[in-house]
Image 1 (cartoon, rainbow, N blue to C red):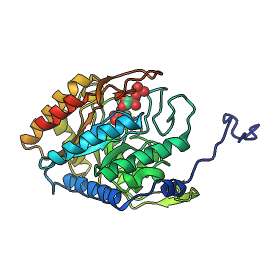
Image 2: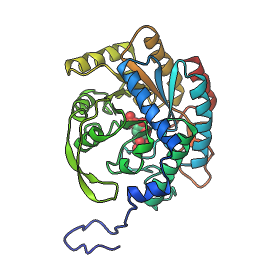
Image 3: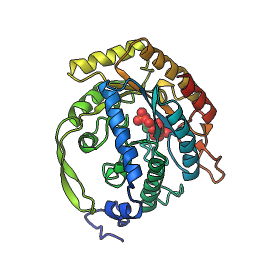
Image 4: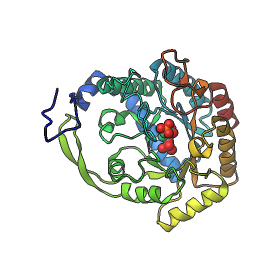
Length: 341
Ligand SMILES: O=C[C@H](O)[C@H](O)COP(=O)(O)O
Ligand SMILES: C=C(OP(=O)(O)O)C(=O)O
């Protein structure tokens, strides 16, 4: 569709109609088994955040998913560990389909599923939902980043935990969206390492809001939310790491000053590994040590891992199972690390 753009939509050269959430859910329905996975996943994470389940939440998986086959293979392997290590850890798969970029770059499977700039978002939403449904059917709960405020209507019924990223935690729109999401939502600290935007985001997301979104039929709608009681902070480091005990104590203090419960997830990647994937195991072990030493505020750890370690640039000859965004630890390292935790 080419808009008449002499005054309005001057910088929009094309408009394509997007499928509705309802139509996508007919194509890829939520089965009884997948609904059970999602609900049990959410309930367990809520119990962990409440301190009623003493296991550590582990969110592990690719920085971004660009290839369905390798994501399914990863899910298969992770499900085995999810079952085997379930006495101490509650393992959830990182299934990230939307990538916020520092400037420009590939924006994730939903935005560009063909990896070629054709931006077929109808296909992207289908592929994301199909994969989430497949993983849920396997019995493994998933975690994602909620970046576009409209996409949750298409996929959130298949997700047990969401994050708002470091680049959007300060965004009013994302706080409103989080207040209506059905699963626990973590807010990352800002890219410079400061915590105040995340603390304010939690307060905002726990409160009711009214904002513009879409309904299941794809109509523009006013959404009235109740607030999300399970919003919490994710320490991801910034100019310097913030996973050490002094930084965690400072975070607890800041949460308490804001009358918020001390509930923290620590991302072992990003600023906490200074973007060096090889440091993630060291970070995760140090966080686990704090938990063993009695720190009850740390509820979980996030890891960026894929089948093959490192990362690669987007090209026509991609290595199977290797990240095309941030570098990840490989499968062997992930398995070894999770068993050691
Ligand atoms: O985890 C993902 C990246 O760190 C984030 O999307 C920013 O990526 P960029 O700095 O490569 O754009
Ligand atoms: C983009 C991510 O992280 P952050 O927002 O912390 O940079 C991510 O976890 O993929």
